[in-house]
Amino acid sequence: GTITFVEYDGTTHEIELVDGSSLMQLATSNGVPGIDGDCGGEASCGTCHVIVDEAWAARTGTRSEEESQMIEMSPECAPNSRLACQITATPDLDGLTVRLPEFQM
Ligand code: FES
Image 1 (spheres, rainbow, N blue to C red):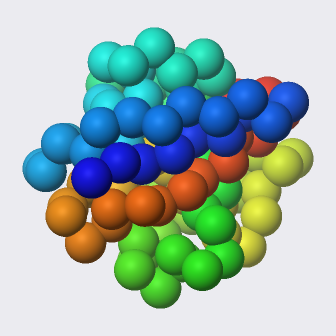
Image 2 (cartoon, protein in one colour):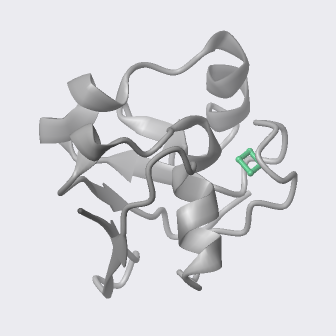
């Protein structure tokens, strides 16, 4: 399976889905620019902000309280904004597309 990250300028990165990895881990290990993951996946740095494609929002779940507090600090926060470190890749998410904001926090 694959997951597609779309940079703010429209550049797409289709990367291999690894079951059990977070989207942040997949992005950073595949060199997707614009996902930093500074805190290592603790939902505390806000540098792994992605916006989940509307069609996928139900399957990726909803933000936790902690995640919401972090992501709402971004001026680019959208209804489907998530922290990529808080989404775990499963075969279920094959074909998922997420967009990156213009800037990370
Ligand atoms: Fe820090 Fe996701 S890696 S919030």
